[in-house]
Image (cartoon, rainbow, N blue to C red; front, top):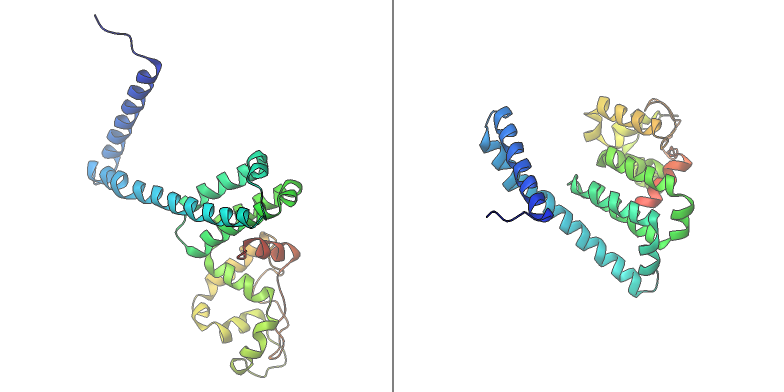
Length: 234
């Protein structure tokens, strides 16, 4: 007599059948067939999980240190729906990225949210927007944002590299100070437009700006300033 399957056994069987079906479908559509599926399951998936564990462990250590310093309260964090949503989104985002600048930015958004829970509750939409921006932005854009957020600190060091022209546009500043970026100026110009549409920078393109040898203009918006403050190391 065949014993009746428990709900858990039925669920496990269904999941196993679904995985087998998925494997067959992938094997049928990929040029390498089952070999490609094996590559994904034995290499990509473990790396995906490894990044998740590393991110969670590092984040947990940072939060634990802040808790020990009396700067955050784990009970309050656990009860905050806003914080739980932010940390869940952050973990998913970290799994999908390998660039250290973006991973550090994600960590900092979480820790700053924990440090100022009332601000997170009152301004959740902006924090969520910043996380979405991190997913879209790249390290070059972050670097440009930081430079044009506080160019005064770099102007003196840059004087020797900038000709004594009366005024210069942003494109010229980039060409003199960042020759490697200037080799990809079309892409940099697109990056700038993307950041302007996101509300982080002023001006439609890198042809804006009235810089001089001794003074480079600040070109980040108030939103851009708050974004940088959110992703900077705590």
